[in-house]
Amino acid sequence: MSDMPRSFPTPIGPDIFARMKTMATTDFKGKRALIRVDFNVPLNAEFQITDDTRIRAALPTINEILANGGSVILMSHLGRPKEGPTDKYSLRHLMPHLSTLLGREVLFATDCIGEDVRGMAAALRPGQVLMLENLRFYKEEEKGDSDFAGRLAALGDMYVNDAFGTAHRAHASTTIVADFFKGNSLFGHLMAAEVANAERVLRGAAKPLTAILGGAKVSDKILIIDNLLNIADCVIIGGGMSYTFFRAKGLPIGKSICEDDKLDVAREVMRKAAEKGVRLLLPVDHVVADAFAADAKTQVCSVNTTPDGWMGLDIGPETINLYREAILNSKTLLWNGPMGVFEMEKFQTGTVSVANAVADATAKGAFSLVGGGDSVAAVNKFDLADKVSYVSTGGGAMLEFFEGKELPGVKAIG
Image 1 (tube, rainbow, N blue to C red):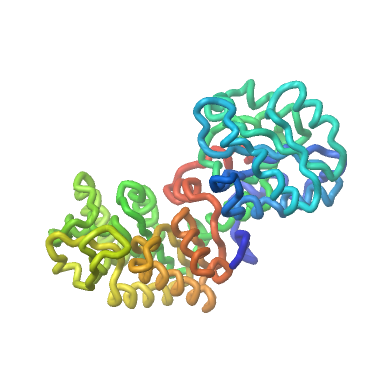
Image 2 (cartoon, helix red, strand yellow):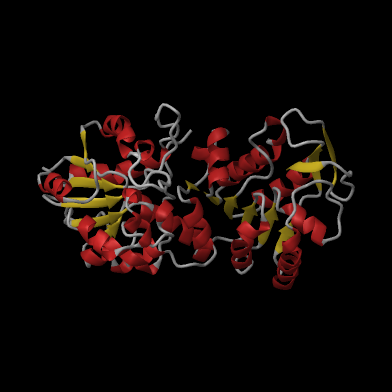
């Protein structure tokens, strides 16, 4: 299984790369690089990291700066602390593992601003790494406070944004701080790869382009569906949100999840797809259960004959074959969202099958981008992360990118 996102060999980048500094063109010797990373990683009850993917993803940027004679000041958030400093959300819990990954001691500041922190930053020597305490211990971070951003900026000589997962937030450390480094801010390797690979799908896709969208709610995906109808040749729908489409078509859905207030939205999506000549694929059969439980009774039936009192929790074998054929005939693939409740073994077949189809299409030469927490969890769970072209670290940011929204963290660097 791949531990890190993979860059496609020849990504197509946006115009922003033509007018900004890059890692390759920047001299880091003797400079203190203030890097916004996304170390918002899951911890267990003993405060041990259970998935270090996001930390590993930032290592190439950190290591290159250190290797080229610079020092590094890392800043990140962890969780959603509401009451100021809380040990549960302290980044100190990450220090032992981060030091191991970098192969050197990482200094830790018990705050992220203030004279003591400024002194630690000023004393850094080339090759040293300093980790600041959780930025969200200050409400000014999420408010995008300029004074707070300025106090962070005072710690470094240049600003590097390598946190695509927070690029859709106009927070002090992700956006406002760049104002203090005009001409001296840049994307790290991860951020550059995320933007370039997303741009490859959005503006430089080889055709046919197929978007595979799953998850529970149409409301979570309506903007991305609407935008993708302008560029996709085929849109595959799976997961709980397909039942909103079924009810909109007048089909029985039993006790399946449904957003009754989004039926008109589903009808509009189907109308637009037909109008634009986009192939919109919905399940034709599904696995239904008598309860939302791992030990529930199950059966496979047509989506036209869903029995009363049963709920759909995965796509069926005919649908798997239909989706696989569409995926294998594609040159570009975007996957966001599972096909069913893949966390339960009984209902993971659809998601596994789609993941394998995406991997097989990639092996045939297709470009595949997987993003969104559940999709990434699926390819990792089934050991397929190294068999797709790129796995995004930014769920919400990637969604907003494909919704056509401008990401504040990206704009700030340009």
